[in-house]
Image 1: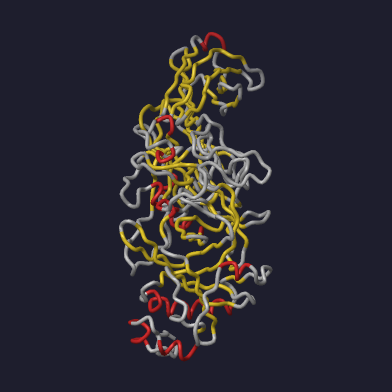
Image 2: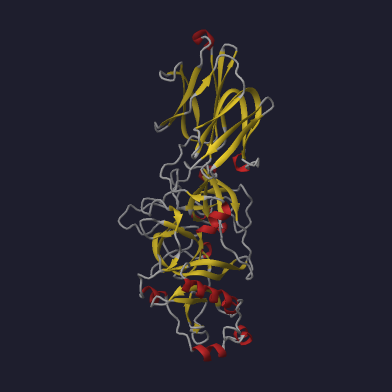
Length: 562
């Protein structure tokens, strides 16, 4: 049943138009404002989640009266919280002390008021903590606002190339083999003003005296953001943006004085839950969830902006300060399940976007894998006969401190010989192409198959082998194979074709629908090529892989299982 102020025993006209609220006061008595400390000093062992039927009832009442309360000058938001006795309660957030003007209960539900002051995005707050300093808790303290060696950790300074500001890298996420980081819209996307593909830096320019950005500081590019709607009638769920990165440029754990890797599983945010966060200004800090289902007005420069379904954290000490926008809040437990992204604050109250809607909006999952891909991303490796020679070609998407490649050859895939060394590009964020011709192979091996692989070496001595390419010393029909079969998560697609030129790899489901997230542009250079393909987010079932170019159309059916 839809509720209004009349059905709640409240005169809507009086309630909405005057601070006196005579009807409410006569009915419910005067409110004595509570502090965050009052709640923390209550039953700290008690938590209330949104799954609790009593909490759901309070949220229903809270939602019904939110517009009426926020229409009162000085009231900036509502939420569902908890009394010191552990009972569900409606909470009000006000910009000033309004004792005597607000009710203490509605329909028997306690009403608690927290004087937060005006709530702003954290980027607009004046920092009250020394930059780069935090709570080390006996661990080695690290800088969070200077340029850090790559891969940079989460929880440190970042910002848009075109903005003299600084926020925090929140969390690394992924979709298949694509990696991203999340922070706030007002950090990565300049509060709706950014264009996609703008470069993102570490550190943010605000932490280096607004110096002009350097390509050496680039960590990625803006991939997507959720636009903010700057009205009090809006229902914003998030202040969030997504940046495309490589896992050897940005890691997925905090610095050594932080909590480490966040859990890919989400916490069921509950009132009273203990949480922690790591941000570029205040480092590792602790608090507890004061309210869930919060509906609140945040004062952006572009206008007052309504958010719904938010989380509010309180702390007896500093939890966030200017520049901590984008910090990931996690459950303060061994599980370290993710709660949400910090975006707004006032005093000891911090406002957090729930993580679930953000992951859904960007179609990503939190990356908690402690093993990251190697810093040289080899996108293709192929070989083909040309008269008596073998032509080898390979491409990289990015390289980080790449010393080079040893080209190795074998007749039996057991004994390998280095036949040449090809220098790498060092560090490169754009695709690079390489080639080598192995001369007079026919004279050495006759008509038997020959095998090649690459030994990639970093400048620090780290080594990694490519997949093996087989070159047959006679023409073969075009073919496509997928390994392993069936596919569990990551697969290797082997394409064999004598054709040259641009081609396209597509994946179709069992109904014949093309799945665009798998589409890859492939340059066929003759012979055999190996391409990685991830099905980790694909539903179990049959799929068809198709490769086509000017010379061939080849298909293969695969089975994905879990």
